[in-house]
Length: 137
Image (tube, rainbow, N blue to C red; front, side):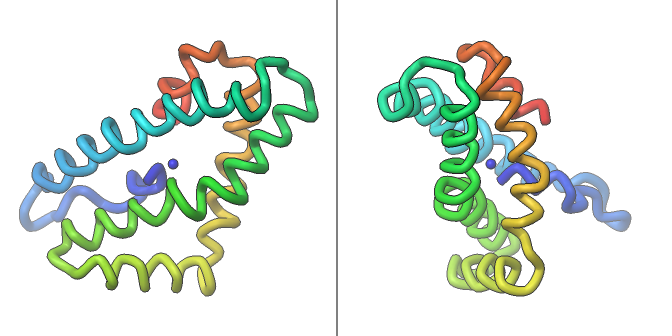
């Protein structure tokens, strides 16, 4: 999910580690991403998709995450959070997200990483370790 933020430099060579930014992203990741993922994957998914682990169900979950949840829930808030941390307006974060989707293929890059990860998550990782597994990626 805000999962790509680690690619951004958190060290400014002239100032050292940006502890405020790191703390903000840690809180954001633990609360928003962690809690929402726990609810979505372990409470909502079983209601919608059932508990069976079949190729069709795993593929459906992965496609749901990639085509619906990522572009609406996982990725945009990371851009909004990053904008706020940079002292910019939320609108600036949103416009940056839209630009990255249109011109830099951010959702295709998301899919390239997370479709294989989510395939593993939904097929072999025990339900109680799914969020932890994804956080480790």
